[in-house]
Length: 134
Image (cartoon, rainbow, N blue to C red; front, side, top):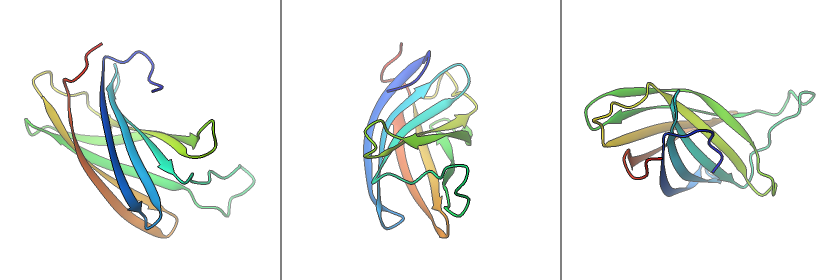
């Protein structure tokens, strides 16, 4: 887990096979911090991230929205993606805003994934907002 100054962290451990017909997406954690709700994930096999000089390779993009148990809506607001230290997978984070209402107890995520001309494909999962408070 690589979050900086989290307010709360929830372990999700949900795996989706055959995303874009080839990838395994593993949703690891939900974290809230002072700015956003963040979802940490891992993709295997790794997604190639092109160097600046290799403009012909296409990137993988993720975006989405979420809905909590109170009916509040959240939109994706960017993220980060890169090759893992072991180079066996790609690690990423997608952020959602605004921060959750203090009365919300669960949230449903809908994430769209696209890689070049493939997709979009989608994954959907729920998480508790109150499992582990720091």
